[in-house]
Length: 506
Image (cartoon, rainbow, N blue to C red):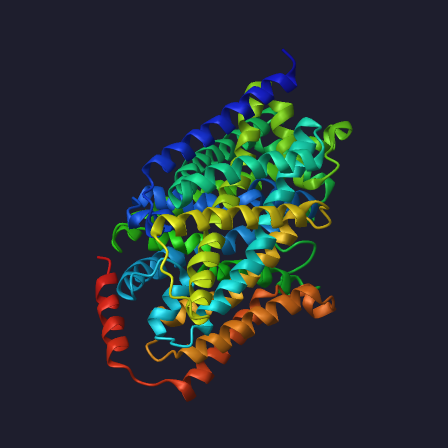
């Protein structure tokens, strides 16, 4: 058999496994919106941790991050540092409180519905605006996954970019559409383990093949010593390096506002489960990030001696090394790990976007337009599946022409969510005097600043990641407006105090 045949067999087996898990989840999912969107709040810590990690990392961990470091050196690794620290803080402080608060606040199953219940927003504006923001930024985020899928098949199999993208879109949509949140979560666990194994195997085999760590470091140092410096070509304070480092670390701020990640906190069995989940999740992330960084460095060394094999696109360095160093079938399994990273994120985002469409927009609009018709849960589940289909189709259309890099698309969407939802999530959980108007104006301000900042090119906007000004403006506006609009509410105060007590993890 040819190399392509071996790799194809591995990929087909992977696809079959994902569809089988999706079918299993479909059989386990009841016809209730709570079960379809949140798995009945019954996730074990290990499942929640691995699914959160896999849905978080996406194609950027195996393609975007290695590509950035391969092209610019270790200065790009600060993104991984910021994300790991942000994930730890998120699991430590946000996870237990969010699990407790969402149950107390009307048993909320989405972030927008939690904001509304927690802040007693009778206008419904906050929930609607949140739903719209989710639709806008997640469409870009899902599109980044589609771009990664197209590049994957183009680089690994010589397949047409569009054909590869459509294959991944179809498979992911099928198991997500039928399996819902449970299907996305269980496939995330399998995909997370596959990614973990690949990110350990590829750099170890590559380093051994290259002659050992000392040889790799020596080769890279000969090419350009600055590639091994975490501050680039100059000291921390020179040439805008400090701004680049701060911007990279600021990726960690985004964790507090990523709906597809923090929804895992809401689905935990109890707030106490967050402690075990934190250890598993952050451990998985730290080791995986080190594997991605090591792959980039050994790639620089390896391709300096094999210039005829050098990747035409830096973001395919992981894929190219895997195909060169492993037996075709094993290489196929490693390549499946890249697909796992891509598909796990797409599936999680599709579920959250669908929930925003149905739970946070359709229901609310129907009520505001005076509809008295109450649909059965199974009908809402059907609408949720239709929502997944619609969002997937739009994302595919946006990804037809891959004009931006994977990291650029992810960075834009990550900043949008971090700057809009992040501060409001923190304030709802840790500040009793946040008002619904403060949350609304802060959220809109943060999203607008991040969106505009990311579209404008100037010396300042090019140096500073848009999440920083967006997050700061959101926080300031939310606090200032709340100072003028907050009205004490006995029920809200009682819920807040009970939630804090329930969330205490010993």
